[in-house]
Image 1: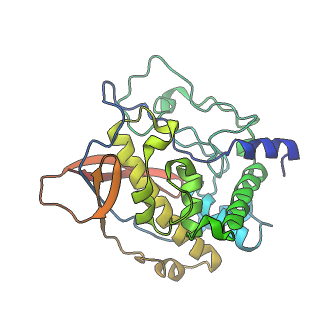
Image 2: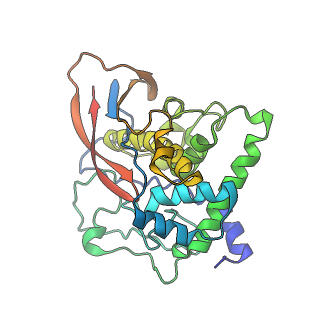
Length: 300
């Protein structure tokens, strides 16, 4: 079921991407900045989707062929595991976790009674008070609408890749960053973005108003989510090109986990080794097959 051409064009004009979510933060928490000198976290534990997830994604994307289909399936697997009526803790909706578009209704309903100390979650109160978006009316829950938006994004990036003036970049890295964080927070996007490390080194929250007011903890969480998103999209695109666990093991780093550390200097991050200083462990959330699961980051 495809949306009307006018509605699709308007949705694309608003760049229905970047399910970043404006965090509520803990009451009284300081806002802005990264407020750290070093961050360390584990690599994501990459694994192929289970049979149920694979079946849901294949059913929703039936008829989406070629390279375009690979990328749409990879995005959908990571964002929602193929659940059509999925809603993320940050208010993004549908099988491809779109944040906003014409005809969309806000998922997050303001509730003055909410005093939740939840982090990285602008919809923390919705677990009790429900969401405001209408599944029967909101176009984000129609797979045809969501897939059309993702397909256009893929095609647009393919055209950029063919333009020498845009510089060299990795397609999965550029797609992951554009869909998850938004291209505006990466200086010179997409040129030079060829790895997860490069993505983090070029990440600058000050470039986008979307991240104004975020607490340091939420920004740390977003750093990890951006890194994870790149690694997952690299692995899942390999899986969907030739479905099977072996395809994921062929990605950089394979399926084994390791540690990544970054030094912080004036809000910018540089790949580095862990320092000798006393790190403190901070709870975060990590996206995996449409679910935010408990994780942690070490902060110096």
